[in-house]
Amino acid sequence: MKLGYHSITWGGVIGHPVGVTSIKDLFYRTNGSMEDAIRDISAAGYAGTEMFDGNLVDYADQPQVLIDALEDANLELVSVYSGANFIYADVLPDELHRIHRASELAATFGAERLVVGGGARKAAGTSDDDYLRLGDALNQVTDIAAGYGLSATYHPHRSTIVESPDELERLMGKTRIGFCPDTAHLAAGGGDPAALIRRYPDRVRHVHLKDVRLDPFQFLPLGEGDLDFPDIIRAIRESGYDSWLMVELDSYDGHPKVAAEISKKYLDQLLKD
Image 1: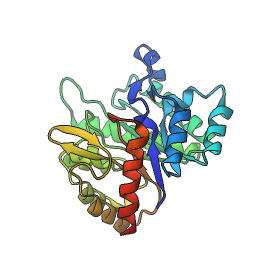
Image 2 (image 1 turned 30 degrees about the horizontal axis):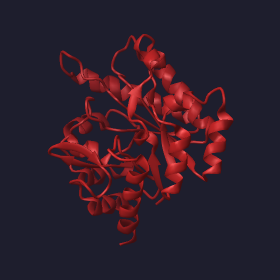
Image 3 (image 1 turned 30 degrees about the vertical axis):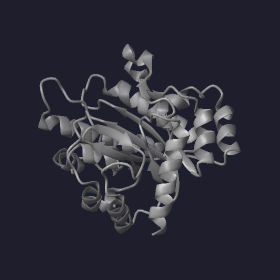
Image 4 (image 1 turned 90 degrees about the horizontal axis):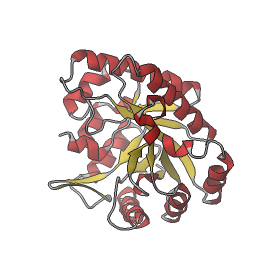
């Protein structure tokens, strides 16, 4: 399996401010320099990276700058992360417009995968129809991504209607999109990441490895939190998945490169055993 590292740690995740008034432009992004992230991720020994759709928007008018940075670092852009509310019929066309744009940019920069999160929690509570709407929207995302030569996966995430194992179960039978297990988010939602990978082995098409301490809550470099990564890796191998493992860390008190190096050293030893 090949190892990649998400660029999120170089600045943390935010939303594009234009999207406050124009949903079609509400891209995810991180404030840090992507050129710095690319150099650091490559220097830490990774072969690939994942970026937010909004950071690719920054290079839409100067694509060669990002292409050259990736080539100079011998780093592959593996995947692009996007997402939406997905359950509100009146804004769904604009949200899917954004998915089209994210997919187009991903393909432009050589990515092979689109990762999406979402499914809003309504103030009035979540209904069964919300899962039907989410499942249908994710099927449309799958088709949009395929039109650009990308494989689409869904990433369960805190603050969405797919956090817990029961919520994931409610969704999976309503959509054909692939499954991107994020080990820390699955644990934060009350699940056992390895068990959930074993529950949906045929749906695993991308993987986010992230460690977490649950009490007090904090995302951490691999090997520094509460998760049983030896069992997680066994479950991934049992599923037949033999592709990119994308390490992700939302924030870090020190330099992002140091966190990337800690996780790389841990994974190298784990995968060798």
